[in-house]
View 1 (cartoon, helix red, strand yellow):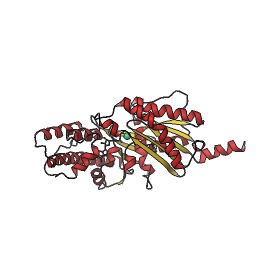
View 2 (cartoon, rainbow, N blue to C red):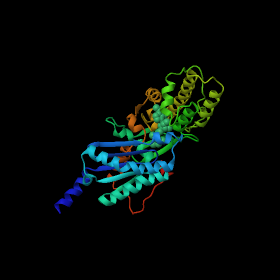
View 3 (cartoon, rainbow, N blue to C red):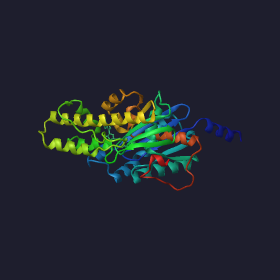
View 4 (cartoon, rainbow, N blue to C red):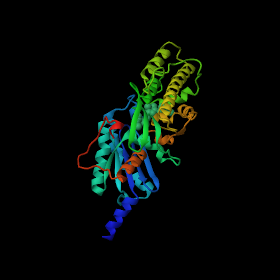
Length: 345
Ligand code: KG4
Ligand code: ZN
């Protein structure tokens, strides 16, 4: 009896959560400890495989998650020095994302939880991105405004507290990362080209071309980025295709994106009166955006570069927070939500 009571006490005071992320083209696994923080994380990116097709191929993504999930779990167990009996819960990304890819993490997470007799929980991928800065040594304090900029989403979120999110603005068409990737493709930079475009932009002349700043002359916090990609395509086709011209176009495109995001972040901070801004999602790795946002009249928080893009650590963190409040999967059905709003949490 003493043992089971002891175990119960230990679970209440300290939880070690295995997090699994498989929503798109990265298999991410991590172990988060409620007392000690992140114990280990491991990631496998499928980017090279999808690059050949110019975008993510869902069926290939699912199959690759199946191949990588067990070796990655083994890797974090080895890195952390823990054994399966030390794991007190399992969190997996339940959505939004590719249905088949999500099913791999969900089926695996739930089955392992069942086998180990520990609670499991499905986590919202974007909540993971929102909370990624909490893994850093100087985490933000609630409330704050969050700018979520990834390949699939562009959101300005009012974060009142953990689990209390209000979407203030979002893209009406392409996500920022998508606009980066499509423009990179137009410039012949391969897929996903966001980082490569940004590198090229460093060599560009900011005065040669001027791209529009979409939707800044009307009130509100929504975004539109598909016009910028068209503007880039038209600029490319009406000019010589030398390296400098490509760099100048990349620079003008990036400047327009950064400026637009800056203007909307400033508006969101004024509207809420909040003094902190969290930037997350893959485009949060963009150095020009980081430098520009640092000039805002707010304390700006970024996750480390590796946790801007998809990873298991952010899922383990959110899962830990939710499991600690007693939330967990209830029946045996394995559920994923390819489309799922943050506001439905
Ligand atoms: O968050 P993420 O890993 O995946 C999604 O959930 O979408 O974000 C990936 C996106 C891609 O569109 C990629 O091109 C973009 O983030 N990205 C960048 C940079 N690094 C990654 N975009 C601009 N500049 C970068 N340095
Ligand atoms: Zn993501």
